[in-house]
Image 1 (cartoon, one colour):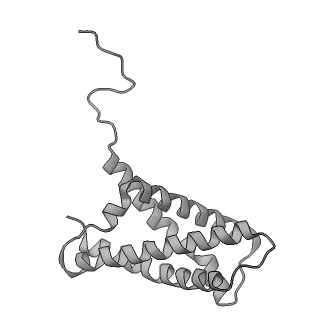
Image 2: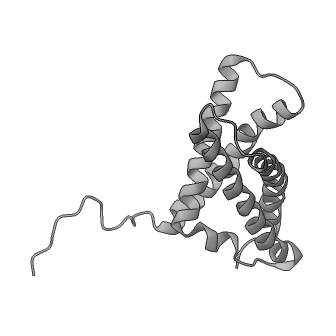
Image 3: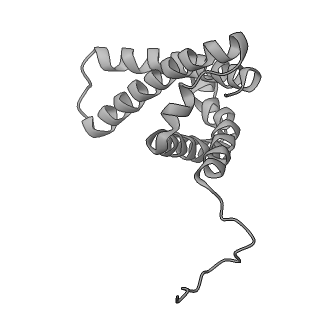
Length: 152
């Protein structure tokens, strides 16, 4: 039988999908605080210096892209999976609601981007603000519950 050459040593396993998901989860968790900083500072009437604001906006973009990639790659199953104890029971519910807020926030921001100079219909900015507050409140709670409740 002819063996095809491989690009890796047979003794070292290739990273599996689970390892990739774990790395993505760590990156999402690490980028959450920098990504959440600009909207929170704006809500409280503060300002961020130019270069720092740009860096934080890039973190926000990476956070959103990583989260969307994670969700599209089966991450929603991971988020809604029960863990151990009370935190493991509450984490899937909190995570699912948090992701619903994230989806609403993403759609509202996209409609704002495509609207250009035209004003948005009245409920869209309200939905965006509610979704932003909900996501920025529930996502860290979800991360804490998942860290303490773990996964099966």
